[in-house]
Image (tube, rainbow, N blue to C red; front, side, top):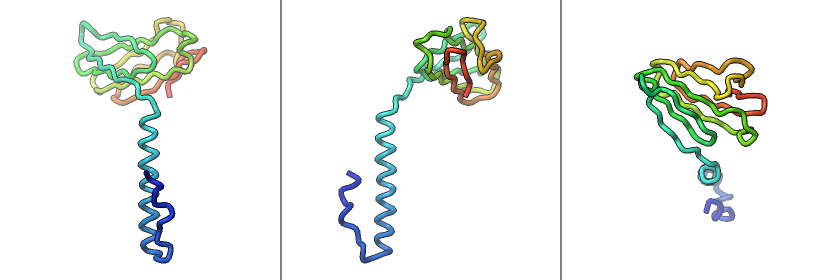
Length: 138
């Protein structure tokens, strides 16, 4: 336990006390990091490799979708707006800078940030949020 030594510090030796307090701060940071990793849910990672004949996949709330566009352009389809998804976060990872990754919604009238869904050209992670008025790219 991090706090077991709280009452046993060398208050009469400033140099040693400084080291002990630095160690306590590191221990507290490690404990909070450990607790955070146990409490915060981590969505499962779903991997998809786009090919010329198989290039479209649906993204679901509560998952991290990792798409490899090395061989072909990919298409990611978001679910139509549904009250059960309002407030849901969608994690999308584009693993390759080759080829584009087109995003869209099952319902073509739904917008992303008030405009058409984006085409992702570079690799990286993108987070989308579903709200009653549409999707929002963070």
